[in-house]
Length: 167
Image (tube, rainbow, N blue to C red; front, side):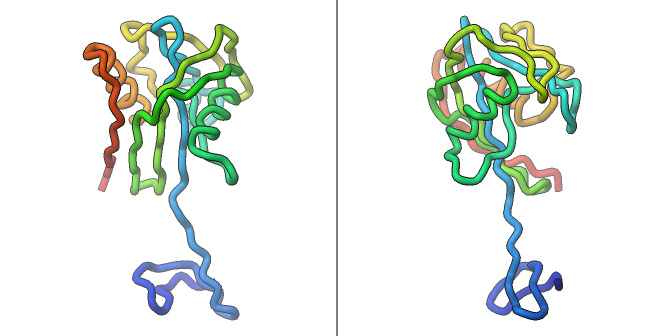
């Protein structure tokens, strides 16, 4: 394998020196949901790294052969044992410094059946005023929560897309 700019390309790629096959590496999609039930937000305390012990919205890497929405709802179930119904795409963040895109849906939690899993040590419904801001796992989760509170105050929920660049 060589890391070089292939012919007719502009970026360095991993290339097989023998057969000249190009092995592309592309950004990973992280999908999740901001689930609402009784005017409260479903959150999970991470039981895995990275950021173990901190609170997050249920989210994770999208799998092959699933849609964004399917991935978000699957991750919600895997991390909280709960079922949700997507309302709308809500936030999307490009994080080029870690080659990721984070996408969150606004969703309704369908019932009060939720709890911890292998991936989460605690699962709770939080009123916006009770969110543990100093214990939020990821900046994209914090931004999504703040947008939700803003939108809740205005009673108008809109899709937001932004870049988070660290260099």
